[in-house]
Structures are given as C-alpha cells and as structure tokens.
Length: 338
Image (cartoon, rainbow, N blue to C red; front, side, top):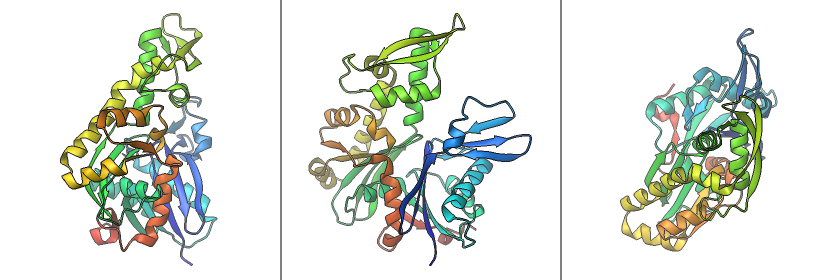
C-alpha cells in the first residue's frame, strides 16, 4: 500500500499526518545545524530547546518565515528528517500533500515542492490553508453556502470565504504569532527597560493575553536582562501590558476580515452572518480575539475544536477529496514542476 503523508508546514510548528493513522508527529519547525561538521544536529523539539543556548558553531534556526521558505537547505533537511521519522525507514517513496498560504507566489510554491521532492516524495500535491483548515474543522464546504475562516499561524494569517469547494475571496497577511511575540518583546523593553526572550514572550501571550477587555486581573512574572544595569531582573506584567503590545496587530487581522467581506458577493456575506466565522490555527487561542472580531465585524465568531490541528486534519482528509476540491488543491505535476 502506498504511503500518503500530509504535511502542515508551519512557521512555528510542523504537523505530519499519515493515511489511516491521523496525526503522527507535531513538532516545532526548528533545525539545529553544526557548521563545523556541516550536519544537522537536531530537528523539532530537541532543536527548539537549543534556541538562544548554543555555542556559535551550532545554529538553531526556523527555516520558514512568514509562512514561506526562507532557508531552502535547512527546510529540505528538516522535511527529510521528519519524513524519515514517520516513514519508519521504509524505502517506499510517499505521496505528499503540503499546505501553503492562499497568497503564496509561484516561486514560493516551487520552493516548497522542490523541498518535498528532494526529501524523497514520489508525488507532491499542494492544498491552500483556508480549504484545509475548514475541512479539518469538520465543516462541509461542498455546498454553495459561504463559510469564512481565519487561519492564524506563526507566520501568516489567512482570511478566506469558501463556497462549493473553492475559495471565493481571500487575503493573506504576514501578521501572526511570531509578530505578536516580537511586539511583546519590544513593548516590555520600552516600558520596563527589560529585555526578555522569544520563549518568554510566547509564554506570556499564551497564558495572559486578552485583546478584548483586559482588566489587569491576569498576571505573570517574567525574567530578563535590565538594559541599563545589564543584570538579571524579574517583573510582574498583566494582561493590560500584553494588550498594549499587541492590540494594533490584532486589529490588523480584524481589518483583513473586513476587506475580504467587502469583496465578497452579497449572498455569501448573508451566509456568513448565519454561519459565523471560524477561527483556526495557533493564533485562534489568543485570548479575546474571537470576541474582538465579532464586536468589530458584526458576525458571530467562534474557535474551532483543537484549532492547532485543523489544517493537519484537513490535509489528511484531502487525499480522499482530491477529485471534488476545485481551486484549493493542485496536483503539482500538472504545473510542470519537476
């Protein structure tokens, strides 16, 4: 039996599914590379632990930036290693379906496809993230009935209206988890003169963020280096601090939702008022985001069940639906990529 592997190649996390088994691997999209030995030291969780803690000849990098490949060699090494982990050492070349943001260019598509082919794929298919996210959220997209999805990952936020297995209107903006983390680091640096790390910012975002109605009740201690004294220091921050840091970024996603609605046919906008807006991806867990979108757009908004896994679950189902899906699913061989 041919092995079918689905890869949700995210900026922050990579989730892999295998036909018949569902999700088999979920790890951070990080590679640790030894410059002296010219070899990959670790991928995934092991490499993530090394970020900011390695000697200078070992680099721990995220080879994907803003939803697309920024370092080709590292991405190929990472995909190859992950495929080897789930393939169990079998020599059989798998069919691979990969997820891409809806606004990805042809050059970026080619980079993703070539990375998978060089990692040992027999055939490569691409599926657009909004389509995969809705399928994974358990929503039937085959009817001529408008459904809206906001898929917020680590690098991009994809906003799309899907009807009859195809994308009717969509926008993709490079405003997502990593940008939120960066905004928190900058805000804490400016306000308290304390430099915190990427992991600390991410932890604060996940634990105490509230972008709708922060009241100072959620608190946490963060540790970092005081910029003036150069010494370690810890301070208490609240959900108000996090809101001050990322509210503008959250509103950027709200604006994209409005812009997609402005370009959509009126019939479909009516459908969205009754069906609501589905939030998927890791960014869907940002405290108060669903309420913020609903209050500004006027349509109900809800977070999908297990939002981080939605795209991967959709990718897993996509093989069975490849004949029905319209513009959201491409057999790359037809596009002359070799």
